[in-house]
Amino acid sequence: MKQRKSIWVVLAILCIALTACTQAAPSEEEPALPYENITFQEGQLYAAAYLGWEEMEGLADYQAAYLQGESVPVHYISPGEFYLIIPRYPDMAVKLYRNDINGAAPALTFESAACVPFVVQCNISDIFSDVTVELSYGGEAVSFSPYISLKDGSVQVGERGLELPEPA
Image (tube, rainbow, N blue to C red; front, side, top):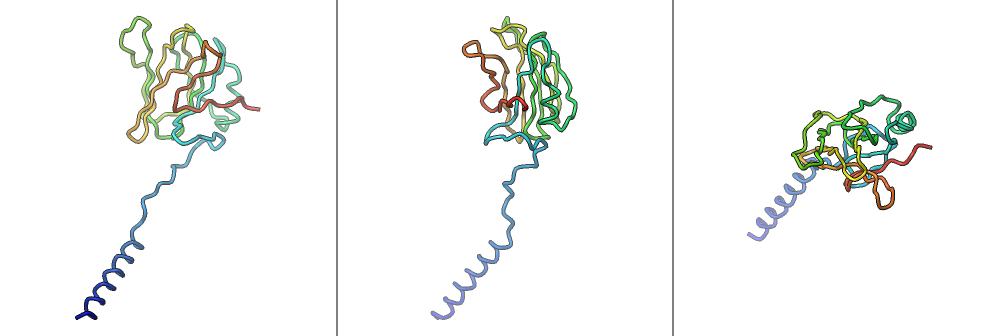
């Protein structure tokens, strides 16, 4: 009887071992990133760069350094600052909202299920950010309003963003 129990125990262990070996582990690999020159940290969902006030400066340099020279659409919210926004993943959705300084609900001005890098012109006032960028990926949405800090002049790209360094 003891020998029979031992055989069953050994068979059960073998079955468990074989089952574990044949099951494919879920892939936790990141999807291929289209912009290899951008070093995203964990949790960052986009990169952004300040391109200038009323005129874009250096867009061609950013395109060459980070976008393999591809052109980008420009979305106009208001005269003011230009920002380059690059999504981390190619299948992110994007929405652009125009914020109202008087407190009215933000107005959707652009929406796409497949985000590509783009430039947004916004922030006619240095005390009010008049654009909200919303990016969605894998059931997660992040919103931010790029602006220049009045405190120290730094570019603010939101908690989940990466500020792109100027190309060399």
